[in-house]
Image (cartoon, rainbow over all chains, first blue to last red; front, side, top):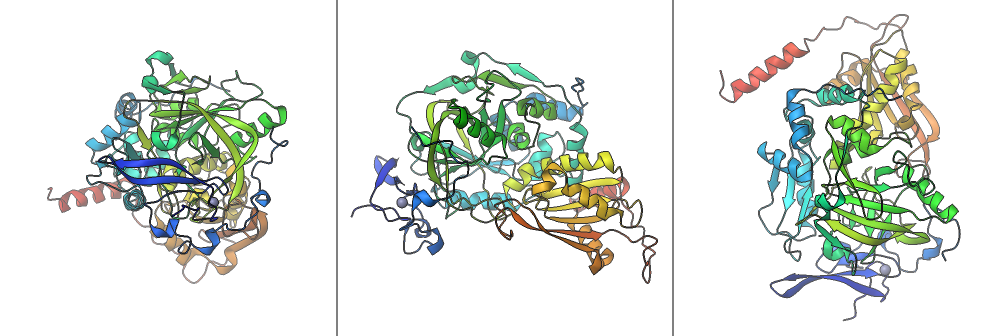
Length: 78
Length: 493
Ligand SMILES: [Zn+2]
C-alpha cells in the first residue's frame, strides 16, 4: 500500500530513517514534503491514522502559502 | 557596571560547582542522591518516553531524572529527561539538601543574583570532549539522535531543551552580543530544522537583521549541557550581556568554553552540537507544538536552517524535556529564574516586597507577598509588577498576600484568599498585552489582567467584624521542629 501523509493526505512523503532490531526493520520515520508532518509508522493511531487524528489537526486542502509568518521574510528567497 | 563581585558560596555549593562540569557529571551526582534512574525496560519512542517523562515530572518535589538506554530501533542511543524536573534536583545543583523548601531555593537564587564576575575557561578545540566525533557529510539527524514525538498532536519531532548559540550577524566578533537561548526546534529533512523565535526575542532580532542585510546567521545547537546552562539561559539578560557569563556567575564556578567549527562559542563538554545556517528568507511549515500553557500552538511558517556539521561526545546523551499541560519540567526549569528578576525589580522601589512566586506557566499567574505600607498599597505594587519587563507580557493573574504569608505555600495563599479578600479588592484591567500563545487571550496577543488583593486590611479600611489575627508560629524554629518530627517518623529519637 502506498504511504500517504496522515495529516494532509499527500502522497509526497520520504523515508527519513528506519529503526532496526535484530537485523529487521522495526519502524520507519516519514516526512511529508507538503505539510512537513513527520511520523513514525509504529506510533499510536491517534498520531498517524487520518481517521483517528482530531479534525483540527488535519491539513488536507490547506493553502500552505496562506499560513501566518512568525518572522516575515525580508524578500523572496533566492 | 561590573564590579568583579563574586557571591560567597557554602562549602557544599562550592563542592558541587567544582564537581559538576557537564550533564554527565550532574546525572552521576543526582544518582548518588537517588535522583537519577535508568529505565530498566525496553521502550518504544512513542508513547513510552512521553508517558514515563510525565510520570517522573508529576512528583514536583523529588521526581528523578530518567535515562533511557534501551530504546527500540535506536540501539546504543541514550535519552535523558526530567533532569530539571523537580525542586529536589535544583536544590542539589545549588548545593542544598534535596528536601529544601522552594522558598529557600528562591532566596538562594536571589542571594547569588548580585554576582557579576564572569567565570569562563577556554579549552582548545582539539581538547574539547564535544569534538570526540565530527560529521560533515551525509548528515541525518534522525539517525544521529533518538528523536521522538513529545505530545501526540505535535507536528513532528522536537528538540525542546537545546541551548542555541548565535552571533550578531552585523557584529559577529562581539562576545557579549552572542546570544544563548532555548528555542523550540522541529527537525525537518535529514539535515534541516526550523527554529521558532519571535521578533521581540534576541534570536528573532538576529534573524531579521541577517535577512534584511543579506548576512549569514550561523547557530550552534547545544544538546545535553551543563545543568546551569538551560536553567539560566532562559533568564532574560541585556542584549549585550552574555548568558555564558551569567550562568557561570550563578553557579559560582567556571564554565568551560571552546570554539565551534562555525566560530561560535560552545560549552566544551556538551553532549552534541549541531551547527546550522539560516536559509535566508526560506520558511517551512512548523507546528503544532504542545506549549507551556498546556495547549497546542498553531501551524505557522518558520525560518529554516541547514545543518553544516555535527560534533558529539562518544555515546552522546540526547537531553530533552516534557512540556505541555502543567506541571511539567518546563515550570521547574524556568520558574525560579522567572520569579527572581521580578522580585529584584520590585524590591528596588518597594522594600516591603518579601517574595515573588511566578512559577506557574512562566508567570501567567504570580503571587507577591508584601507588607502593606498603607491601606491599598499592595495594589500599587501590583501595578508596578505589571510594568516590569516580564510583567508587561506574562503576569496575567496577580495575587497579593501579606509579607507573613509564604507565596510558595499554596495552602497559605488559599488562607489569604479565603479570609483577606473582599470582592471589591479584585481589579480587572481590560485589553492588555498578552503572550500570543496564551489560550485565554481575547485575540492572540491581547487580553485582560486580574489583580486580587488578598492582603490584610488596615486603617482607614473598614476593619471588619474581628480584625485581630492569630500570630501563627513560623520561621526557623518551626522548620526545625518539623524536621525533628520527620526524623521521629523515620524511627529516630
Ligand atoms: Zn502532509
